Amino acid sequence: MNNLGLIAIEAISATLAFTLARFMLKPYEYTRESRYLGLPLGFASLGASYIFMGAALSFSEPFIIEQMKWLQLFTGAYAFAFLATTYYFSQKAPKRNINLLLQTLLSLLVLGLVISYLIVLVPPTFALPSYKVVDEYFRIFNMILAIYIAICTLRYHALKPDPKTILAPLGYALLAFSQYSLLIWSFDSSFSAFVGAHIIRLASLLVFFFVSYKAFITPQTADIWKRCS
Image (cartoon, rainbow, N blue to C red; front, side):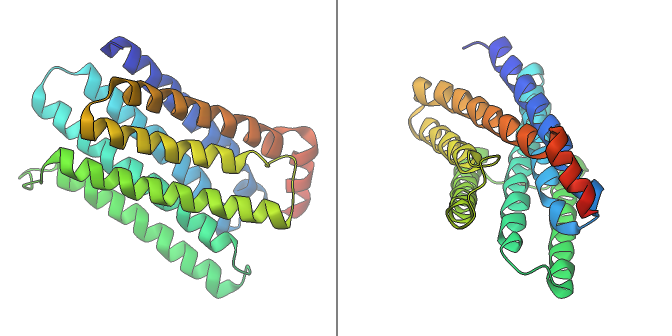
């Protein structure tokens, strides 16, 4: 798979992720409840991470490539943190103190993401550790959070089956497997693991697109959200 093919996959992935973020913003627009903000923040961050990786593949200047790769690494990790935080608090009773804690944590995550960008972009450049080593740790971190979210959504559907979102656990499981495949590629440079990771990621985003369209976009569900506002 050449650079042009990889850039195309990153562009498609980013488009899907940003579309999903727009879909998932609708519950917040209808209800104005902060517990619905983590999902669009998470998928928007995923989209940004794919753009950064596409940019890293597009440039020829080594310094810029290194910056884009670090930005992709940080943004992807924060994306999974946004999603995991949202699903953790979605299992709590929607009390005022819970909502305040969620707002505080989301704000801290946004602040942490901005600080991470400053560390990478603003001179003087901080001495960063080996990208390969950090990348492996971040892949493990992302994979653990994705598995946690898949378990949360699976448990929720076991208690309250919902045909509109029943495939959500599959989407997160595929995201986790995509991170695992990239981890394998980092260890042994397996070409099949690298290609498989990108195919699995696209499959997961398509699953989320199907789920989000049914849950947030169809006329019936739009009326439900409006009645909740």
